[in-house]
Amino acid sequence: MNPQFETMPVSIFEEMSLAAARHGAINLGQGFPDFGWPEALLDEAARLIREGSNQYPPSRGLPALRDSLSAFYASRQSLALDPGQFVVTSGATEAIAAALFAALQPGDAALIIAPAYDAYAPLIRRAGGVVQEVVLRPPHWSLDRNLLEAAITPQTRILIINNPHNPTGRVLSAAELDAIVATARAHDLLILSDEVWEEVLAPGTTFTSLAGLAPERVIKVGSAGKIFSLTGWKVGWAAAPHGMADVIARAHQYLTFATPPHLQAAVASALAHPEWLDAPSEGFARARQHLASGLEAAGYALLPGEGTYFQCVDLKASGIDLDDRAFAALAVEQAGVAVIPLSPFTERDPERGLVRLCFAKKDETIDAAIAAMARAR
Ligand code: GLN
Image 1 (cartoon, rainbow, N blue to C red):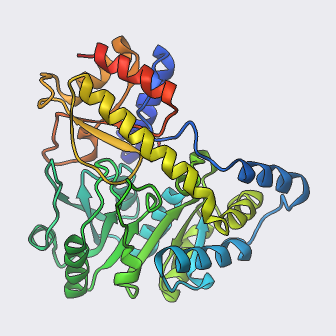
Image 2: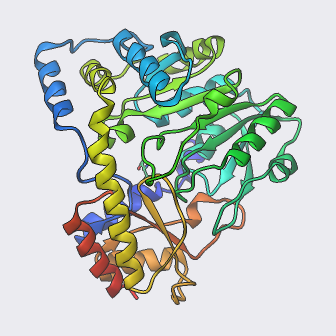
């Protein structure tokens, strides 16, 4: 068997979800909400399974979904993306895979910003590429042009940006976005902009898509699972300049070929109802505050964050003398709550004292998790 996969650890999300199930623990590890999806969207999907098509849709995605995506991004983010620029995929992870397979040739390098979402490095390597890592440091995880320039080599082809950022929860500032665009233009790099958390923002936070700032070089990745709080639906997409979208579509046709048509059609109709997102956003804002105040009351020191479902905790500043993996093991095995350690998201010299908790949960789930976190110290 291929050693690239034989030696690969099980993803930390799967590891912690399995541990949570084994120990009957509350799962604030893997990021999925236990409320917040529009009920009308479930009804529409159920109706479409009965009455709609259940046969192969076009590989690039249902025209109705690509039209809806174009209109949604025009109204929510003022982006000029026409329907032909979208490739619908089975989840954002598949969009990232297709984009990297399309962009990289063997020996090309891709630059990731660590801590980095765990799918990037394995997919770069699967594409025959080399991983280059810029490592950011807490509490602000600030990115600047010097850090990017220091990591770029003549082999660098693509920058992978994740904004809002998982696992830290930070949202990039205008200055950081400008530095990314200026660096990419100076070195003629593509930008793979993983923007799956674009609709999951703390109150008062504004999000700017890189696709609007550098439309000539940005592959924007999005996810219906994140927009509509249905993470298991695995309906994602990539949007790119026309020529690039065509190449991504070629890579996609031999990954999954297509995505369930009733789910695509249901997402297409939901995108025309952005007001369906208002109640979930208010619910998530309250949940964010609920978990943060409960953790602080239990003596935990929190890191700032403006987006995603996640709150990071600084163990050392909380007076806990365990590394992140040891704490995560103790929390799930003895205290009854699963969290995600941050060290697996950085290859070179990771921070070892930070953990991530998902706050996108009902009040009773958060209350029980806070009580368990109080027991973990
Ligand atoms: N995006 C999810 C998270 O960050 C994990 C998804 C997965 O497990 N593949 O928690």
